Amino acid sequence: MLFLMFFIELKLVMTLGFTVILITSYIFYKKKIGQELIIALLFAIGITSYYTYEYTSANLLFGKINLFPLVSWTFGLVLVRELYEHLHDKYRFLLTCIIYWAGLFTVEYLGYHFWNIRLNSNYPSFLGLGFMHAQVGMKAFYVLAAPVYLAITDYLKVK
Image (cartoon, rainbow, N blue to C red; front, side, top):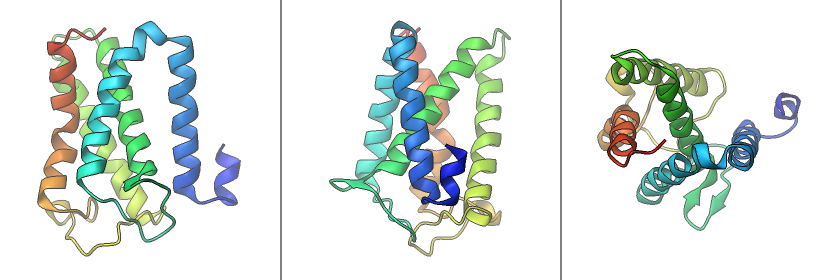
């Protein structure tokens, strides 16, 4: 898949790669990730149908929903839940959130500055740090998505 990114748009390669990983994981670990995958997908549909993601480069849309953030959010939230389930520390919720925030800020920074993944907007960056250029509500969602997702999946006793 990485070889493809030299010939095809990076967001498309990432979308295909994340989709293949999610489908393969579901096929092999259906009982293990089925519920968390559905809840993550609902989260992703909620945010991508509410907020219009339009990038400066190619946009692959399903209706008005951009598939890159839809698949990326789904993949990321499933990954966060899997990390959470594999930690057995008494502070695993906090530790998972810290890892999520570090990963989120790193991916956002790399995406904006090195991979040239940019929204077609002029919003200021998160705390002036040079990444996460979006409306204030979106910035709040980005920061709170994983903690809320983990709280909901815990409440629903997702295993």
